[in-house]
Image (cartoon, rainbow, N blue to C red; front, top):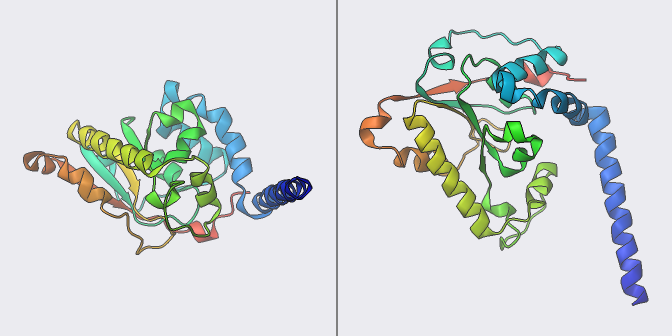
Length: 231
């Protein structure tokens, strides 16, 4: 019993040290905490003014200016089914940048299940997905990055993950058929050659062939993010 007590105390100590290290790292380098503090205040306004307007206001708060090098209003403003395909994801701000250029409010983001925790209003625009490797009963365990630790903290089983993903594929197909828009970043490793498994195939397969012709896929590429200093 004494040994068990000592082991438990050591585990708690390591956990506290880990969180202190993450807090220091975020404060000095990542800046996520400061961004979330601004986000909490703005998220309450989403129902009233829409997520695109809130995203633009957040960028103003962060003093981030965005320029569009080609006209995209055909897809960002008009009522039509669109998949906005994010080609790169080099910082934490790309989804907000994508929302900020939208003139329409019927836009949804396919994102990790964990990000539905960023507020009830924001969650209404999130179509959650999860990789099976983050399920608690996934057989092959491996060391994961910070975001992986957050995903595993959801404590989802493989059955839960499969159910969530199937539901999102179904909902996404319906939204596209109803001429709504979806933002999707296909990679998870901050690389241009990243893959999203068979996700896009699963969505498109749920749409009747004659309806697919009415849906556009628009690539979004973000440049200048490596030089971006948020705080």
